[in-house]
Amino acid sequence: MIITLTANPSLDRTIELGAPLAHGAVQRAVGAVQDPGGKGVNISRALQVSGVPTLAIVPGEATDPVLTALQAVDVEFANLPTGEPIRSNITVVDPDGTTTKLNAPGTVFDAELRQKLDELVVERSKGADWVVLAGSLPPGLEPTYYSELVAALRASGYEGKIAIDTSEAPLIATVAGEHKPTLIKPNSEELAQLTGSDNWEELEASPELTARTAQKLLGDGIEYVLATLGGGGAVLVTEQGIWHAVHEPIQVRSTVGAGDSSLSGFLIAHTRGEDAPGCLVQAVAHGSAAAALPGTRMPSLKQTTPEKVTVRQLQL
Image 1 (cartoon, rainbow, N blue to C red):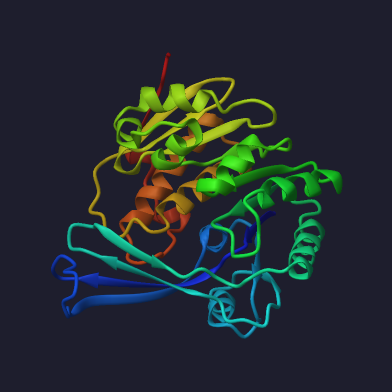
Image 2 (image 1 turned 120 degrees about the horizontal axis):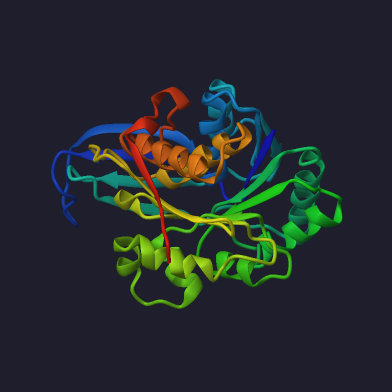
């Protein structure tokens, strides 16, 4: 079983344009889709369509459109009532695949709501293989929240693996914290944030530079750094070895959710007993499949093409 927490879920609306987005203009869309969203939600959706048992923990009312949409696609969830509607995020996609995202802030958490969320995560994580803490934090939760939740899970006796996929201050606090996850999944911009680099484009263009940078984050509990590089594939850094994998070129429809799908692919392969490079191959295959779908649609395992992924070990 893989548990996901989406502390700041969303209703994701994706609009596809027939011409580049023009500021201040009225434009006609050529397509529009709406999906339940948030990193953990996306990961659970990808796991569910691939037949992997998962439970999505989501703050929100059971009648909220996000949760009724999860119910409609048979994603099991445990919700924490908040008395507030779940936020909406809007993504605009240009014909060349360029995306513009508008994200609302989310429900404000007070101390009581936070305590209830902590208790729900700890209770439902008992016996799970992985717990995935993913996405931005809503107003009221400090950047140290994920690190503190890792500590609470370990204090409760949880012995499984923990993955964190977030950015900016929560990611920095996670890596700096005393209690670290098993896996982190930064993209090139997030890796730059972690290491103080001011040029994430150099990281995205160079798997070797990415690997050397990610190596610094291993240890103290962090066993895997899965660094995604957009169209450049991904790098997996472990104590046992470092690998880079890339998929054959695809026609990009939307990059929203591709990183979430990559982590899902890694988790699916890991639960099947694949070795590290095998997990990386499936991560890249999943991310590429998601980028070829509209909106934040999550691919099933059958929709991925790991045979089109090339993997090589990096010697630094």
